[in-house]
Amino acid sequence: MTKPLEVRLQGDREIVVVRSFDAPPELVFDCWTIPALIRRWLGPPDWTMISCEFDARVGGSWRFVSRGPNGFEMAHGGTISEIVRPERIVTTERYDVDWTGGETLNTNVFAALPPMRTLSTLTVRYASEKARDGARATPMAEGMEMGFQRMDALLVERMATQ
Image (cartoon, rainbow, N blue to C red; front, side, top):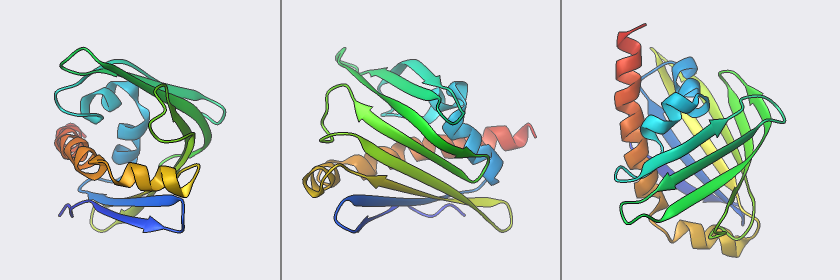
């Protein structure tokens, strides 16, 4: 059974986000790396992802652009420094409007849990402690959980077609 999102601070620059999914690692990994799937779960529910690129290879780049209900656009992207299907993705990330205080390093590790579940541990390393604390002060956890609940529904759909 899916457990609620857990968020904790680690060291002076990291936020660790842990979430389980009721699907095998291969399917969860696909939701993080295939643009057609990313579009269906990532971001606030009342926003539209107008551009979604993810070149799933070492040295590849990624970029997402979303538009809010008021027309505001938010864009962010980076590069992929490590990708091992279905175990690990390491990327850099920078927002066009740099609200996170510089580039982050995101490491997402997927661990298989019995019977057919996945534990995702996402570690976000910020450029500074101030940037990390600023990000943690936002409703990021609530926003992430909204997206993860949409991913849960997507995973149920994908498992039904397997």
